[in-house]
Length: 80
Image (cartoon, rainbow, N blue to C red):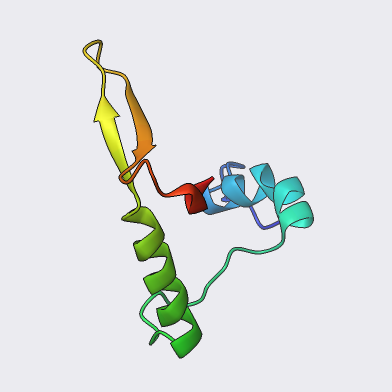
């Protein structure tokens, strides 16, 4: 694939590329887009909707430590 070092050993990046070659062939290259981009109006609306949806639920903890999610307003049938 690539040139090996004079001792015949591959460097870390060569080993990684060889090990993930089949995965990259199936899934394609890694996404290299920036996370620091400005939000679009559509994304702002979607974020506001998701935040409003998350406010409709609350998490309760049982005495044994397990948790479950219940509607904040049990009379609101729009959630079901």
